[in-house]
Image 1 (cartoon, rainbow over the protein chains, first blue to last red):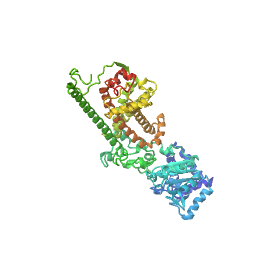
Image 2 (image 1 turned 30 degrees about the horizontal axis):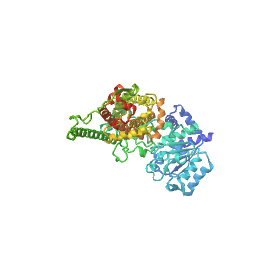
Image 3 (image 1 turned 180 degrees about the vertical axis):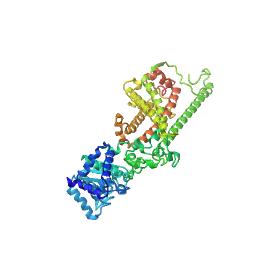
Image 4 (image 1 turned 120 degrees about the horizontal axis):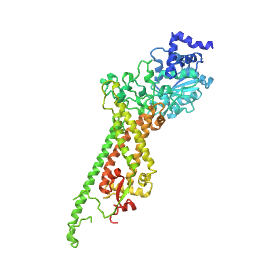
Length: 382
Length: 242
């Protein structure tokens, strides 16, 4: 026990992180996880006493944005150290080993620790052309993902590509890209952490939750942890009061934009996007997109590239009417078209009735000499 | 020369109680609700009025949403009541006057369509909905249901954690995501407005040519129809000599 307690303490000491900072981190984690503040102590104990979990980080069809998101954090935080001190046995982008050595490290984890490691997957998994669009060491991404994720205690699909297919899976999806959930249906304890990139705090949150409670946090219907994706951005937004009041930015840099009004009319997808950005923030809590005046683009939602575009308008257009059309403009014109069609119908109706009435009047006259027997003045309709 | 000459025939007109009070009440509740929902809905989609002063002094969007949501409750209950009445009410309000479930209704629908395309001078006479109008209303009720479902889905995702309406949030994936639900909600509104234009025009037109008190009937419930329409609907004007 004594030995186990030391790994984190030593690590913290070596990096100059004080006990106070560590306690603060555990308190923050309790808050991120929506636990009572007192849970911080339990988190601290768990982190210090639990064995280092082994973690392998797979990268498939992606931009390494989630990896970047971790590596480029503003200052070394306790969170980084918790992540660092996980036994990251395999991470293509940042590991020192290369080639067969690297692949052997992965194979070793899968072979020696079945059900004893956490797999983090970044990027979507292409299935087109027999998986030829993404191969590592001669094996397809699908092959590797199936082997590694099916043998893992848990899989964390990090970023929108891994969680929902993301940009590579956007229409027309040339590589047949799939999310981890679709590509590896037998993956156990799959947790989706979408967003482009995913927030490092939420990954740390999931791992700290696992270390503390020895199970994974409750998730929603998209397998997203509720602590991070339970509420819409709109409902937690610092500009929400302006939305309810009816105060909106109408052009970039206008009075409202400089005042910090709601970005709803600039295409903000906060009302349909679920993540804890407003609470946790980005870059060590420095700021977040809406905080610096940019509308949310809905990057944490399924099919965001297809359904949230155009990013700077409230509503998508109508297929075939161009990117600048809106469903409402098309709808308004369609309604006007229907009105015009019925107006035309009305005029034709009137015209035909007029012609008919005139024909009836004319008919009665020339018929008279031909049929002198009938009394004159008899109309065509009785 | 009278252009709008009524079809004058020496026939007995029967006073028929066509639209029972639930039909008329739900009709007018729907009509009012659609207006209120559209006006507040367009504001929610395109907030053209910008409030000035402190955010805490204004609640423009808040009120628009509140009115929208309360009216949506009225609309939903009204639509569901009318659908229930399709299985409880009189002959003219039943579901088989909307969905053309018989061959005779299909044939009569073609004749009504021919009338609209100027192929016939007079429309085939019916006491309640003609089959074409009935089918239109079937689609209108589908449109209402689409609005209710997409609306509840969007509301459910942000409803209070204790709200039973949260269950509707689970429909979001089946609608293609929330943003797509929003898109459908906007698009179908325009479909309902296109229907509104047609509805008012056709009601007035039919009132003129059929002369059975069509427009008046949605207030009183009564129509005054030639007896032959009751005995053999859909044939009066097709065979005027018969």
